[in-house]
Amino acid sequence: MENYQIDKYVQDGQDPKVVEKIHGKILDMLTPGESINYIALQKKPAVTLLPDSITVSNKRIFLCEFTKLGLATNFEIFSWQDIKDIAFKEEIFGSKVTVIPFTGENLTVDYIPKTQARKLYQLIKAALDNLQNQKTESKENKIVIENKPVYTPPVAPEPVREEPKVEAPKPVEPDVQKEEARPFSSFSQSPASTAPSFPSNNPVQEDKPSDEEDEMTAKLKKLKSLYDKQLITQAEYETKKAEILSKL
Image (cartoon, rainbow, N blue to C red; front, top):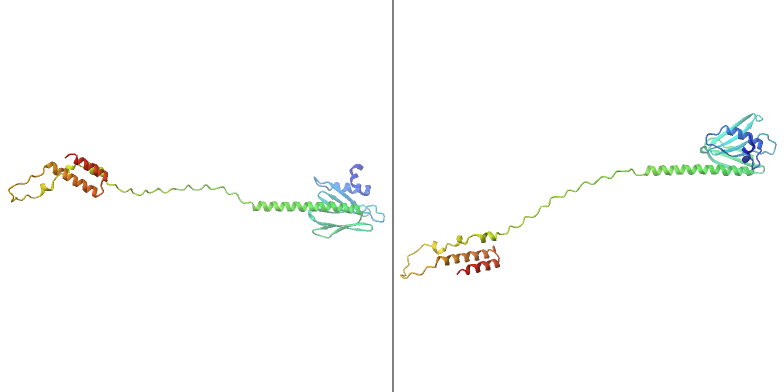
């Protein structure tokens, strides 16, 4: 393996040979889209050929322990969803880094150099915070979707039916013109002509009014009767009266 592939993992004092070996093992376990972000190595006061290590990717965290003089390797692998928190404690010879999962026992790697322990803490904390924010946003979006009102198409209002207007009956006005159109000949019969005749004791006979005078008198009486009954107006009465009198 070329050195440039592990250069970014040895900038905080990591042993290049150990990093190279761990890097090769982790590469074989990466999933599509997963990449290694940081490798922290244990550094005990005594000489250790293959120390324990903590590797952080963008999806998971790998705790690696070499056993049987490097012939065997134990891995504890957690996705970010499985990790509750990360803690570290600085001591005289390095720091003690503890991974706290939601289930199971806490896993601790001691004698991690302080610079590397701080870098691990920053990376893991940032990953956990990012995951928590995603969960919160997902929950809020779910609440918004559930509370979104169901669209109901508008219903066209029914047309208002107008009731037919019933007009009040108009008062019947007397047909004055028809009354006026009647020939006055129907009223021309004189009362005197229908009255029974009695023999007069007066030898001298009085002159009888002419038929023309009886007819005009009857017309005037009839006209006055129409006016008294308010079947004609005063103007009509005066006009008709003048016409009758003009024939005298």
